[in-house]
Image 1 (cartoon, rainbow, N blue to C red):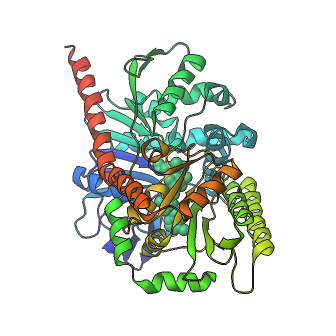
Image 2 (image 1 turned 30 degrees about the vertical axis):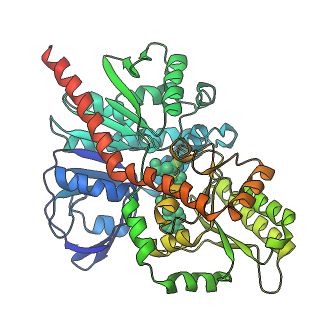
Length: 494
Ligand code: ADQ
């Protein structure tokens, strides 16, 4: 959707959420256009913020973000009937470099995903992380009133909850959702500020993870690294510094209806043009991978399994094409640059090995795909391979299921992703590092009887539709209400 709206006086904030990224704003003379990405957290938060007349606090780095802003970097959205405030935090290049690319993505990201060897730290990273967390906390303090709910998103804001807690009245509810895994205490101990991070997060009234195992490792980390905190293992409550934090597992869903609708309404030309551009023959069976280019996503391991599949099944050469859609990500970080180069070299090597005059085993693209094209591609894919080595949840697996309106495709799903808990028993479960095993699963998928494909997909679809983004949002707010009720009772001494 693209909206136009004029710069206007900011609405009064009575609740606040923090988010690291939001839609792109573009200045257009006096008016401003805003592109809203379909699906995902933004689509889920937008109606909540409209309803609450809240404030969305996020950093931005586009000129337009600040061209629209008044002195306080605030703008009212949405354009048609302004109902909430977007408050932008302006970060310098140095801040983005050290806070976002540095501490968030070269220290916390590898540690939380269990890759401590990939940590690349510098003294100023954590300093900037503290500074930016403080700036978010200060913005929250400005906008929050006594009965506000503050909802923080993700690992970029690990210290802000404590600062907010100390600055706002006890009646303000502070909640956070952590979108990535929580590591074992042993791996967390490699974080230079592990204890400070735990103290930061215990400023929340509510802390959400995708699945129970992350809740368990979080509580184990408290026991091990912050022994002065008291953990109630029966209710998953941590008491620290006079405050109680409830820790819950609430697996995130997607906007399933939108993927379903896009898959049904995308016109055929979209897919034909994409296949033409990629040199994919329309008659081929299609395998598919869709990921950010990130070392957690297991892309080389997946390509190795595809290679093994062709080795073992010469009859499928010329008949099956594996489409890999990879989105470059965090490209300023050398580890990511090397990873991207490695993936591209592997694609080239495997293609050189098996290609014929009119067929290549792997069609690789890094181009941007519009939402309808992505859904059409999901719908067309006979075999979807989701094989991260570790992933907090994984939305791509759910997007594939929601787009599979013909109920005809098969999902191969890594047993190391959060989504496996809900979808693993009806997908073909894989160990992403087991090349032979994944190749065998691809064989099973391409020869699976239609009836079984349907049976599995029907079950997967009902799980994805029942547990969509709306249901996740209402679970979040039910929990927020529960911890709020407890705080009210305590405050009244009853
Ligand atoms: P990510 O690591 O980014 O998210 P994922 O959950 O798969 O991983 O979400 C990626 C999103 O990007 C999907 O919605 C996908 O469709 C989209 N995407 C990929 N390529 C795209 C392209 N070219 N154009 C447009 N969109 C594209 C983190 C955690 C996950 C967790 C989510 C949500 O790492 O584990 O599931 O947050 O909590």
